Length: 465
Image (tube, rainbow, N blue to C red; front, top):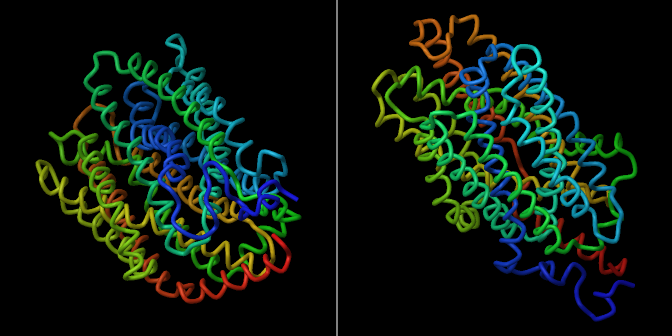
């Protein structure tokens, strides 16, 4: 019998945790979310600056960089299901998720620094090989941190709406890191030697992220009744994901949207620099992040009033039409760019809060059917679909740029401008619109989830959990 049971305390309580029902305290939300500030910094630096850093600073050909990035995302996607399964299956006195975060924190910091600080003596094939190892290593190691961490968030509470609050806190701290990355980008771009400045900054970020991740894992407590509830076989685990009708629909929606969404991050610098002109792309992204961040507190109460599905659908449609609007912009359309960026930040914040909250409810549906807890498996499956689609699109993006006549650091031809605008605006518009139409069929609502939760709680009482 566990110590918590012997003292008459509900399972899963203790420092950094509360009883399964009720509002989570601020300290738990903060402890859970704080590592994402470092993760957000790393992710957004890679998303927004890595390709143009590689093409315009390191002078690696766009097609080569896109292949490296695409392969890294595809391999990263392949490791997600394995990481999710092993995380669910981990049995230790420290829990299921904690060992992964603690053991992966320092390796993540190391490959992140390697990615941004290649030796100055490297050039040609040697430099390309270094960047390939660093980029692939970064995304693979990020999986070992991110999958257990987001899975842990789904376990903090079974409450339908409190989960929205959990992932709202996660997004809020992630945005703090992302906005810090944007401020650093302004400094890097203005620097005389950006390559040297990047290396120094990334060393600091890597160390701080490792400390925050380890500190969070040490403080939080896991629900002990979940430790031995993982799936028996990896094939069976992901077969259950595909059999789940709610998960199956979302996997299709995510795949289609990710095909279009992948071009957004890598092409924002190109859109700002070569299409709009006379505009700082970090400020554009900063506007996006600020609008996303300040509206995060709205989504939990609005979700209670209007429902998660309606808000998430609003986010999908808003993203489609927001990015579609960029196709009509051209040189000098600075104000329109900032307006669209702010609107897209608002709708993206809504979607980024609602998505993991809904995914957590789908995990409960699976437990109701199978008796297993597979948070890691489900979030890994969603990541797999998103990253696979993104990898394919990123590879194609580099080739389209190169064969459209793109040349770094010079005014672009009409064909290159059209390629950038089409990839940045029309492709995401079509993908998000199709995803929105498909999402209309999603049916897991609060009432059905309440029935599922009541039945699961009854089973646990009968089993003495």
